[in-house]
Image (cartoon, rainbow, N blue to C red; front, side):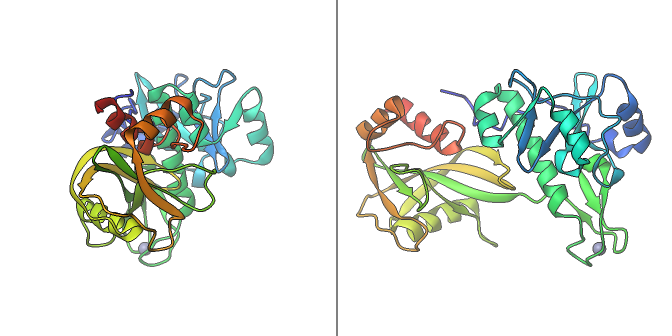
Length: 299
Ligand SMILES: [Zn+2]
């Protein structure tokens, strides 16, 4: 059983102080030991073996808005981000030779833990830069600041930080059973934990209780935080909780779920072991599966 969810575990030093010094960033950009890792809308660029992100010399690769995006320091070498979608088609193709573009979910399953975390960080940051080029306050085009940590509006001075959307996901237990639901369009027989976005003016604990009731009619109580997971599809932060319930008959209510019900520990244990049968659990890359496996380990 893994000790923390996939996509966490970045070991990079984010160089929060140094990145404010444009001279230091420029020197790192031209240092021979510096590298860049690349991703686009289609996924992340892995090396031929598929065990790490492709690391390339950053110098010649044009960066978004001409400004480098620094991910951080790995030992003494700086690691930059390159957006494949910003490169000329020929340049992206040359970069991709001997490498392969892999969707982030798939990469999360392939890569060692810290490398998967780095892939998620890369994708999260590029997603945000790609979709937040204009000031939400005045509409002017914003500029990359702090080597990619923020964006600054040259007209009104507002500083924008990466958008992160908190989502609660909860393991609700009653009498050695878990409350699981399925959305329309999922692979058949796939069920997972209930989840939903935290609303404005709401605590994460309140969101757990509200979402469970909205999606199933079940009253959950005592939500306790367990672990979180960056989930850049495109910008979520999953907040994993456990909660209890007094049971009752779940029913779909708000149209988000196609089916919802209680599943026994035996059914869940069988599904976790066999990956076949009446119930398909979410894949190991998800925090839902992390929470389910953790619960199974205690039964
Ligand atoms: Zn502005």
